[in-house]
Image: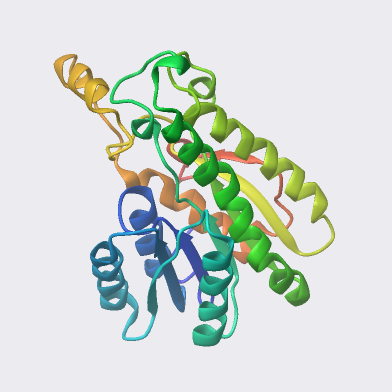
Amino acid sequence: MTMEKILDGKIAVVTGGGRGLGRALALGYARAGASGVVITAARRPAEIEAVAAEIEGISGPGSALPLIADVTDRAACASAISQTLERFGGIDVLVNNAGLGQRAMTDDTAPFWEGNPDGWAEIVDTNINGPFNMAHSVIRHMMDRGWGRILNVTKSRDSMHRPGNAPYGPSKAALEAMTLAWAQDLIGTGVTVNSIAPGGSVDTEFVLPASRKRGEQAGKLYMDAGVIVPIAVFLASDAADGLTGCRYIGKNWRDDLPP
């Protein structure tokens, strides 16, 4: 299946688009022909401005909109959606990628009682409430248009309940459950909801420092962030009509097979 221009005319919002998976997804959408790509971040405006420049290098001037918007702030999410609609006139795709990793709790895997309680609250707020806030802000627009895509970025299933990995792992398990619940809520509306995961450890800042050090000593190889892009592009396209409430693994994508 060719991905060239498969998203022609689509407008996509990618949260946490300044680096890692979010940056890879934003650039992947631009290369697939999206007319507009909006990238958000809670902080670090220089990062999303740099990615916006890369997007415009692919798709032309005015094709990117970088916005500072904390997904834990409902008003900021609503504002991001409003600014996107004002700029591009519509929204076809929302990718809930923004998230906080276990580093907010501890620099290494540890029992839940040894971590920072404030970090626990931040992770839960970002990884569970954040996707809800963004989806809640855009869903009526998508329903009114009779078409839309919501993609929730999660992780390897076994690591959702791995010891020393709470609440990051469990927060992604909650997002998986939310994905299925939302998909069922939206049956018959033309809006689909799916979850996507790389399928293993990706070379991003989400790897805990101590875990990275152990991995390097053991010769562990990390996947590139781009591993998630082909499936995310396909699911954002018209070719994925009717596929909803499912979980897709990036590393399992096969270019030599029909979708």
